[in-house]
Length: 332
Ligand code: UFG
Image 1: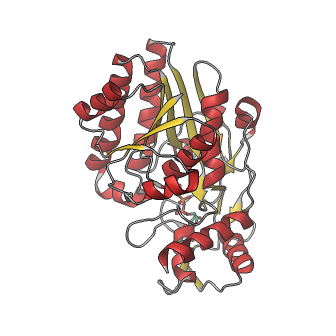
Image 2: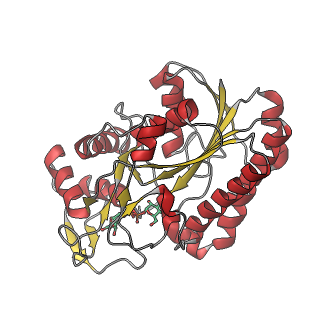
């Protein structure tokens, strides 16, 4: 089975290419290198011992999308490509709606034309919005999103639902990720945010490696286990395997799954575990809450377990060890 992976050189995309290759899927990559580097391709080939065709195309150009489907016999698509920085999306909403929506619609139109109807979409737990719950279950439906980035995810979910209702021969899987972190155990691929990181784990690594002075912990007065924010951190390799299971095991129709560990971990717990596992100090200070942050949420991941036969296998210790291994190997 030949799978087109859009954004296949990015953080989650690249790890998914590895797991697809390990499960003997044929992989074609489309990536415009906006938020990724071309040398990831060689690293993927080194890890898997396989070669991958790369189309350095921008999916907002429909003629380019068409060219891929014309040349390759694609059986299914996993769609990661898209802008993903929450703060930037607030400053540049049009850029986010233009890029994320147009590229997805182009892809779906071309898929329809070529009668390719298997689609896995990279969605986010952010579509639940602030719904007053801490444990998110798929049956809750979408809430009010808090950033244009999140709104593009929710809008694309809705577009896919409408498409499915218009033609139920599509097989569409919406995967809602919780907080993807970690890196491949080879240390060759991992997360490479541009500039100063916004997310916790990349920031912790920059502080641990001495590139940034101090981590700011955004609030310690939440109603949580130790007052700091609680999230469901998922190792990117577990997440990648979830995509393979979605291709292999998702039932017919349109299905939505949370991909998370089902366990909440606080900011302080994560920092302390990182220090212990890697035997290194992370300087931090507690500052005010970050506007827009929710105190606590994590996945109910039982639907993915029951229907996809997938669950996370890696621990928070594995996450901290593999992240640090990558940072040391690639960036020092
Ligand atoms: N945090 C800090 N200091 C930092 C960065 C983060 O204390 O420097 C805390 C946050 O307050 C939060 C936790 O660490 O409690 C996790 O924050 P991240 O920024 O790593 O992740 P978020 O949960 O805020 O972001 C995630 C996804 C986004 C998604 C967003 C929606 O990464 O893609 O949820 O809420 F859009």
